[in-house]
Length: 196
Image (cartoon, rainbow, N blue to C red; front, top):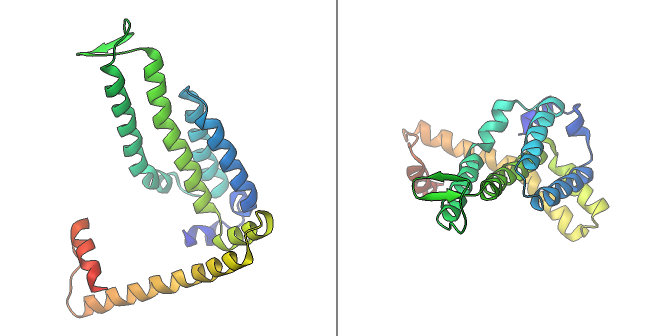
């Protein structure tokens, strides 16, 4: 994330005030939340991916990699809502598959739910990838009246995160030098965290 900021600091999305980005994020979230047609979140999803790619300089492959788990969650919500509404046939369904029947309205609502998740997450990912955390904290203090007692400790804590990451990397290198190998699979990696 830091490398994108260093490479693209002159791009429009990186120069935009975090306060304005937060306002846009909240407005888009409200608009998407109260609309039940799937094309509105779909248009917002396409728009934010395109804007982040063009005006933020973030490669589409990187964005899609980050959004991949949320795509799975979104598809899960779509399938679950379709299955749950497909069993409750009160009228003549417009679409039937096996014993499931859906009206077009149920299909639109299911697609809208999934696309809403993706659109809101993509706006959030764009915000995180194109916002300098130091500028964000300063903006929160200046415009949102975040108390200094909270803002500056958060800023100081954020300054220590890169040093913690460097220390963790040093520990990993020391383990490699001593012959410990990198574990495969996420369960083994979680179990190995005890060593750190």
